[in-house]
Length: 538
Image (cartoon, rainbow, N blue to C red; front, top):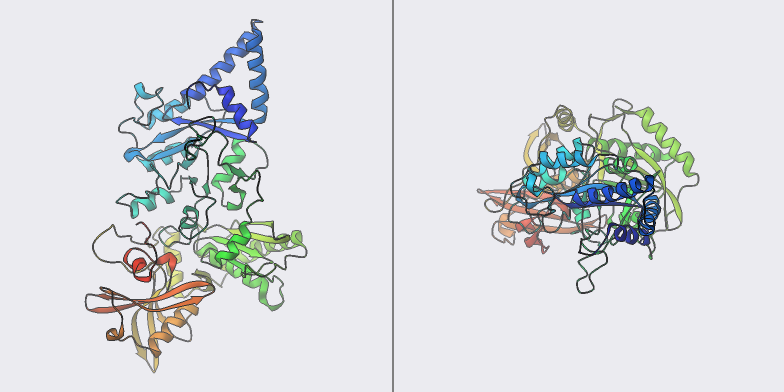
């Protein structure tokens, strides 16, 4: 914090901005928070002894008034190895000495413990820091994840598996980002929404001021003051325990950018504009008649078996269409909760609640990625999610779910920059075809997760697979007719459900490999340049 600013100044500024919870997170130290606590204790001791001056009495009254308005949490911004910044935020009931012990455990030098400097030499690695902070009961947040010293490693010349590990670790609770209110496919929140094959765990993205000043620098808007760029959190009470519960949970609608002078963000409408994906879908109808209720249950089952996701009931995917809404939201909430509990096994902890969009009440179902797959409806029907489609799982997919439950799930390989061009990361590839008694049986590879499924026929294939098989059977690819760019080519670009899909081809050691139904989420590196998209950083 800039010189000449007191702790009371910080609390006054926070209160004036409407802040209800603030964390003191100095670099690699808790000295600032400790000094404030000691100052308050000293004033309280002087009050007990009857030795308070008028000025000190005013200070103590001000502290008490402001701390009734603003919950002050202790913490630190830890500098891990390679310079990555990690926030640890803790309960106000935790003793400062315990926090200093945590910093020492993370290898902050004793002589640097009170310095408040970002330069502290060799410390602990990122994953160790996550585990230690979480194990001590703290909230673990990757600071300015998409910027300098951020674990998303934007602009760095390496990444791949390292970035996946740093942003998908189970001990990490949130990513603090600088572009939360921006829209588009290249925003950080969109990147980590669970739709990317390499990043299946959806990450909570929040924003914060990262204030090193009391008020925003008039000469540089990037240097924010206390109470700028806030996150709004839906809590049952203002407490650290309630806050940590939200950050450890899967209800992503409980945090959003705070807009004091603007209309609240309509995230449901924003979701409709994005359309159905592997992690979200929409159901205008919800009655038992016509199988609409069963379709919702099938999606819940599929999300639990795949990457998790969110369903919006009482609303279509068409962003231009006025939502019909739900006639009796509380009754539908109870129905969905009861049906999921009764018909899906093993139990899946869904969150069902009522939301509002464009003046209409709709029901939202948040489904976590299950830890005990395969999940089934009525003990026998197992569904999975493939891009924006839910379908019955076939044998090889069920085997893969069982392996995942046993800790043997396939990990999607990610190449480091340079060398061989990897296939796209979404879509499907026909690996092999065999004819038996006049019927063609295909072996399909799901490019999102690398799973291979055998014995797929045109008749048994779900939508994307059926499309790929029909194209391969009816229009075999002739490499001489492809407009090649090096060893890569585009066969077709089409619009499906409002999203661009590509059929792509690659020459690989003398073999032609065709990738059908590739979405933008799966296009990277040379593929992105091929189709005219800005390449994502690896």
